[in-house]
Length: 518
Image 1 (cartoon, rainbow, N blue to C red):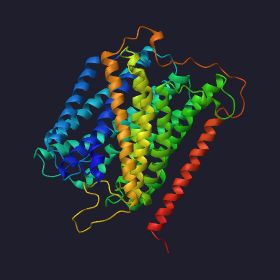
Image 2 (image 1 turned 30 degrees about the vertical axis):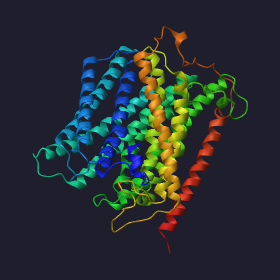
Image 3 (image 1 turned 180 degrees about the vertical axis):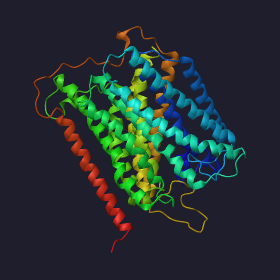
Image 4 (image 1 turned 120 degrees about the vertical axis):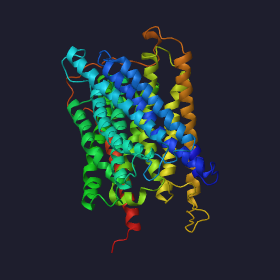
């Protein structure tokens, strides 16, 4: 909210130095700290509780947790004391205090240790046959994908942050800024695909816990996870489109072809998870028309609502704008506008964060053995947060398409030689964005209160009768069904594709106006 209320020139809340300071912290916490802490917890949960297996080295897990906490504290300290005003990317030759880079390295090493523990736990579980002789459950398989992506993400981070740390200490003379950018995006963008793989893993888990839904074709779902491992690093190319080192053919090949491997993977999952819910509901007898199954879903279960809304937001906002923004031609115009934060609100916030918030509602009774306090508030949070994020994203994205930049304290460049006045309609979309941000912020506060009160002051769960969230039974088999098993999901997919085509056409239309072709 501090960043948003500063970007909005009517309020322009923070002075310039504190704007970049808070923006740096916001980027790191939103894109790395919050997400990675949650993912590390998910890895330990998915390799032990889900597999009915033991933790190989609990003391090592605690040590890695301490490293990540200390690393986070160092980064926060340097940023808030004004010695690391370098933004999320910390592009060289911008130089921060050595403690900043040391904090990032400690955090990354701690995460790498947890990933190693995840692999070790799985190997031991397989050896001891704690989950039978079959393949890994789809949830854990998805986390395995996220872990491999995590290794591939953290290693480029180490390659670039270690020499930058030495440079900040004065032990080496310089860091090549072009090489820094090239390697940084092997970390910066790929980290977001770790988030996506973890988020989708929880979608599958959520479908199973809430309605007993399983993928209608697990092989296809597993292959879709593998697509992320191929496609996402290549999609990072859209951050390097104006850099002189990569060749034009490399840029075109990655942003116009290989990127779609990752897009295809997300579209497969976006069909597989709702169809898992639909088939489970139909096997329970909700077969009337296309959407009887959807009407009778457990809408009073906030964990289910969070999964459902995150799928919708991630698909219709994060996915569609991601495809547009990732294409070379549109990206050259959009990349430095505030439409990019609008895209993040549809992916990292409306997708990943909302998914994690909803999953927390199951962790409170299952891990902490406490009932969810303020349950009415807990049920309202996903709806309220989704409303806020959608409104915020719509406001920011539209402002970006109207040309509002994203990296500047003063978006009008007031007092400078390039002062610019935006169309009057931008005033309305700033209000839309601020209202959306305020709603989402209040929802987050409500969620934090629910979690803290539940964990530290909640009523103990004595047994199944105290569970407020359902743990669904497996629905009965339907051996006599023929034809489409998920016609409702197919219809929803068609609606999505139509919306995608409309938005894509509009963007290429706007592009043709800006880049006249004779």
